[in-house]
Image (cartoon, rainbow, N blue to C red; front, side, top):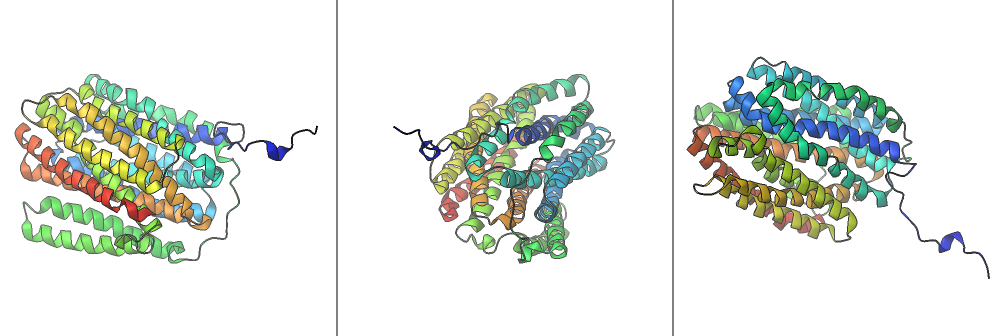
Length: 461
């Protein structure tokens, strides 16, 4: 008899919490947890913020300002990460994000709060892209699904306690402390990230020489896309008050946005070309349909059904739990990517149609809870698959650019859907009955977007 050879031992993918990857994983999860607390808190606190700052007209724009700023930062961070690595962009993004929280807490007007949201968006945009590049460079291919699942799992604790804590803090101490309370966590977070950011990256290829590798051209394109999205949303919001100038702004915004996206996204993305182009576009369909409803759930439940801040946040909590569950399941089972993506969008469409029942007369607002578990599951299962598939379809020297493209469609989908939703609320009205009508209209529109994604999912192959 002979001793068993090393080749006889079944290959075991490296564990993301094993000795080699532990510091990187903990660093990533710590920052995601910090960002998640803020993300869950803002959604619950926004009705109180809008009331104190007399900014209900800017309800949707407050979310969109964050997302449009993130869109611009995504592109800059993608170029930065491809050329210089991910550590410095990652830390810079976290610092900017925290500065934005401090500004938000100190806001004395709606304008100042919007500026704070822009700074937060810049920080989040840089952080997200650097985070994706970190996963692509540090973890082997077979470990990436678990890394993305862990990323989603980092939302579990904030999702469970964030809305309730934010509601309690806002009702008893004021909404400003929802922002201030997160700031002390920055120091231990950055201290723990030091070893994580020293984790050696796998060797890459020479920097890409393609059109999306030119810093000046890409920065101009990002500026055009972000400015176009902002002008577009401002024009849409003014259409009912100033039809002519609103229409001109809308047209100019669309033109600028189209110019920027043509250069920011992979070739053929706007035509839904097979493979990577459609994979990148699917990220926008997921974000638009989900967040276009998610952002208005607390407002609808509070204004229509009389929920308090803590109770209205429960639906957001359950959505995040469903998201984490879906992400975990996609990391445990094999399957064709396009079918997973199709299942994700279908779940979101069904969930949205169930959720709109929550504001109808005679129906319980608590219907939103099981509905948003289904929506969250669809996001975790399908959207995580989109991220993994896009990285598989990307050359190493274009991982930063394509990660940025994913984030661009993500942020743009959310910004446009939330901004249009806010404009619809302004047009329809702010009474409880009118808000209920607006929520139904928004829900039907976003369900149609999710169903369109279900049809297009097959083109990701």
